Length: 353
Ligand code: Q9C
Ligand code: ZN
Image (cartoon, rainbow, N blue to C red; front, side, top):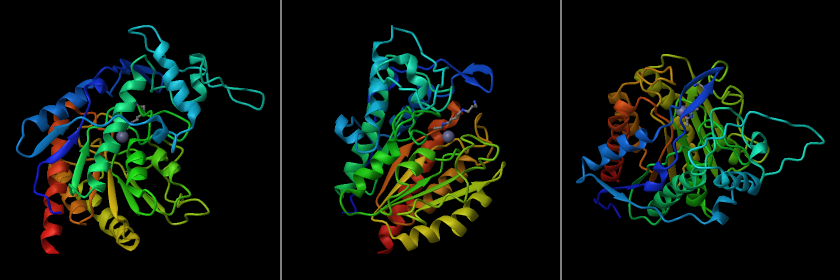
């Protein structure tokens, strides 16, 4: 193996057709942070180094693959949004629930039954963009699983780690990182997911809650005061069939590179080594960056490189899936910092064997 070829980066232009314009954030109407410019800036950084990265189109993911992790009613609702009129964005605002409530996944007015927050709108383009975004993750996983590349990158946008089996939310519609992990796990492989986005990867956690073949780990802002609030506590260790196969590492605000690396050394790496995965998925949000408008961590671009390098040095074949990261001017350099770090660390680990 040890193929010295360029790092494959998966992306499809239809991911740029979905443009959420604003969101309701704690009662305020703000410009939506999850913009197409994010993906465009990452693309520009990748295209600026054609000797390092190779841009590729993903294969379109069959709906049957989505159905292995997601409730078909969630998929029906996302597809129902294709009927919305052009340039219209639907914001779920009625969240009815109760014994006698029967949600209709074909009725957009029931979308509130299929989401968990008010910042994740639907438009006629949502489904296509979300499906291609998930397709990037699974295609990247296929390349790594085939043994052709030690590291592959999915430029997934919209992101995915907040989407649960039956709910979209947190700017996420489909569980991209989880779908990559599921693909890598196949019938018998073991997969570890390390989620370095500043928000808890509640979707990924939930999707593998009872699966001891997928170890889910997330480092994030303390949910006591930080989105997604309901999950991400250290007490969440996995379901009855998989106790100890979920690890949450909540970190305090202003966490810097040193504290972050200490958390990796103290909590994350020992657990991963003990689990001994066949593959790794890095849910790579870069909203831990010091200038990120959503996050309250203090990581520099150099810290992100170092974190990538440390994770790469573990030596596992790795799929990197883009999650959040909202300081658009620096998102390209921050993502490539993680990627070059991972490549360097991984090459080093392979040279050691
Ligand atoms: N404006 C990801 O990073 N919004 N999602 C909270 C404050 C939700 C972030 C309201 C943030 C979700 C993938
Ligand atoms: Zn995030």
